[in-house]
Image (cartoon, rainbow, N blue to C red):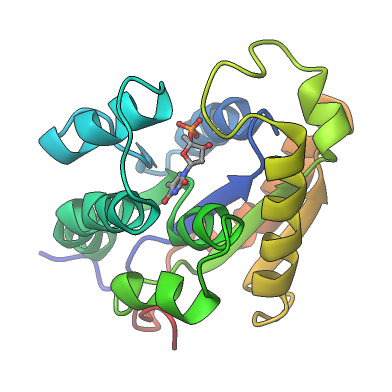
Length: 212
Ligand code: TMP
């Protein structure tokens, strides 16, 4: 029988090297320890054919027009949209490492208009909450591995952070939660759990759609 309460859709966003991947993994372990079925997704999903084109672009092995790469990032989310909906309907909590907000923030930071950037993601499943791990570009730069990929430059990250700030204004404090990711990993983890914990008993409200 289908679970009457759907799983929660949780998105974790942030600048490069803000600790998203670590926090998402910690969150999954915590959910599982509580007996909650949870799946992690990561965008870009570099395993698909579209994802491989994105990967090549991010590693600077290929060049693409700004609009073309933007559309590929969006298509990469659409590839998984139906399976996200199915997992949520089956009662699984879906935790997503980056989503459409990164799509808008990174492309708008290059000078594309916000409206143009938002259009291809319209009607994707909307997260129940977006957790934004906030870090300054200076803090990010001091972390291991910084600088390996295309956007890991201070001036880009500064612009991206400003666009994330603009996007956050459209949400209320229940649907967009900003956490200071410059703090100790454990402290950030407990703040993440404070946000996610109340959603773990499942939700009866229907899933919303971007950007409504
Ligand atoms: P990652 O390091 O989390 O794998 O992210 C890859 C890079 O791609 C990161 O710099 C953010 C960027 N990005 C976009 O430009 N558009 C998108 O839609 C997504 C999901 C990521």
